Amino acid sequence: MTEKIIAQLKKITIFNGLSDEAVTALAQKAQTLKFAKDDVLMRKGELGDSLFLIHEGRVKIVTVDSKGDELILNECGPGEAIGEMALLDRGPRSATVIALGDAEILELKRDVFEEILDRRPDVSLAIIRGYSNRLRFATTYIERAIDWAQKIAEGDYSFIDQSQPLLSNATTDDSKAAQLLSAFFTMVRKVKEREDTLKKQLEKLTFEIDQTRRKQEFEEITGTEFYANLKEQAKILRLKRTQK
Image (cartoon, rainbow, N blue to C red; front, side, top):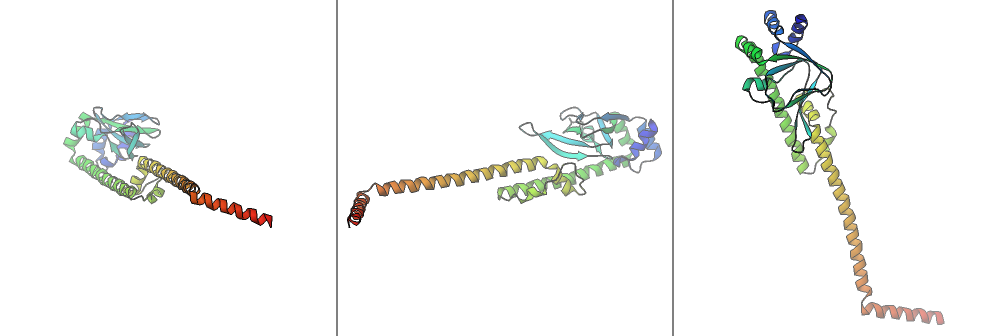
């Protein structure tokens, strides 16, 4: 079993370049876990006491909005590490992680993780690089969200056509951000649909007001003494024509 774990660890990004001896030491202390679709690896707010290394499968990192609806923050796959933030700052989990399908995950407990950091500065650097990559992605994610929010304020919904299925392959941070902002797209579509509905209701109301106004103006005109006299004169003229 250890040999299998060694092979798995060598595929994890933060352990790339480690010697066989270092990887073997890790493998002896790592535990292999299996998850099915929708299984929860960790929950937001829980005390973090382990680091998860994805060997097979994919997971989504989520939180919830004020209404309790799920918001997807990121999606991770083979070779990526999750949960290290709580180990480094000893704070609670910052998000919930859920398996998107069958997944095989390696778990390293806090004491093992801290021992690795003490003995292997190269692992520490790899983790820092991982944080840097996530920060870059977070920056792209925020920039995209702000850009779209500004477009909405201007009434420009053209970017909705950029929406992509969440699980489609993404090759850049920008395309991945577009995929993961699915909740944003859903909200924007609802805003646009509501705006379109309001426009139709306004057009209908405007038409009804115009009709009512025209009817009122007609009634005001036909209700005058001048119109009554004019109508009477027209009646007399028609009568004279029929008598000829």
